[in-house]
Length: 114
Length: 113
Image 1 (cartoon, rainbow over the protein chains, first blue to last red):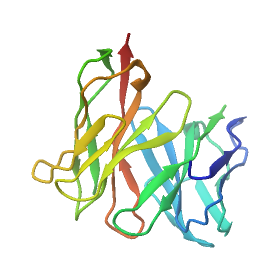
Image 2 (image 1 turned 90 degrees about the vertical axis):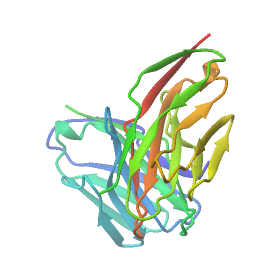
Image 3 (image 1 turned 30 degrees about the horizontal axis):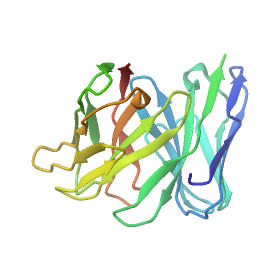
């Protein structure tokens, strides 16, 4: 257990509404990541953070924004949700910063956009 | 760019059968390689990893060897149990500072009693 929680765990929303997902960690890791999981695609990186207020885009960042105002919290925002953003979202932290580092994942948030 | 190709599923085995799930990769530099497992309704758990060529990762009876010459990291277990039923993901890290993971599409394993 890497001390990662995600909230909410499940959410149903309507197209066009804003949605914010929260990832919280208790172990002061510098790097945090947001991935989405879709059938046939494994997990794909949306955004990541390498420190407070330091973020960068991943492979599938369109339609998403992130913020990190505290080390322990990494927020993912869908400004105007679309049905294509229906997915399971996972947060991860990186333990270690060398070539032997490992990412550990939170329990996930299942988001349905109607 | 980096990519991971995983054996297509689903895979169905009887208890105590031998398991192999193939994984090959394309990457620049010297990535670390991982197997993650996802049980129904749960997040991803690290199963094992290897950080350099010829390293063998092992955990809970599962093994995988980092083969640079064949760019492979196949997952094996000598005798599967019903409790091993899950989705297995092969992944690698990028060589840059982001160290983002690139995943295969996952392999669903079902073990029957």
